[in-house]
Amino acid sequence: MLRRLLQPFWILLAIIFLIEAWLWDHLEPIVARAVAWIPLRTFKQWLAERVDSLSPAMTLIVFVVPLIPLFPLKLVGLWLLTHEYWLAAISTIVFAKFLGVGVTAFIFDVTRPKLLEMRWFKALYDFVMAMRARATAMVEPVKRRLVEMLRGDGDGWSARMLRLIARFRKSVHQAR
Image (cartoon, rainbow, N blue to C red):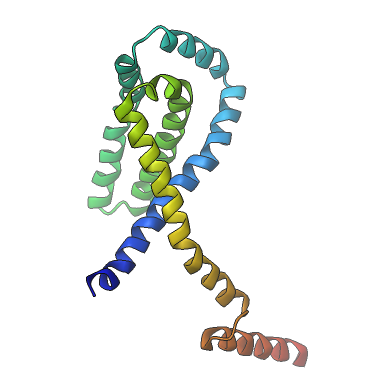
């Protein structure tokens, strides 16, 4: 009973997790292009050489420190939100989110081998990857049903309703 009541909550969490994963996957190529456009490729190589000489614990600091300056930017977004500057607030928060994911992807790409040397980090990484696979499996049937519903495929009342609406719209446009 409790499991059934909590299922929408778990699906919502899975969707949020997958959005984060989607952002990560899609911002990584954008960051790669920015690295190619701005002379960050040299910086990335320099950083990789420095990280190679660090212990895994020090590498964790290298991974976490670049995210600290983003926190005040998110606070600015929240301040704008509380003062009802809606567009500026949303823009700031979205910018901070994209920048945070992009910077994290960039730094994680450099530090991953060293970070994975720590057993607890490897276990956490494996757990997150397993949760990502589980979230994908959990959301996939819902996603498939939504796509079927939007296409008008399937036998449910919503699919029949969408086909009926599509036929009505087509008949109205043909009548003109």
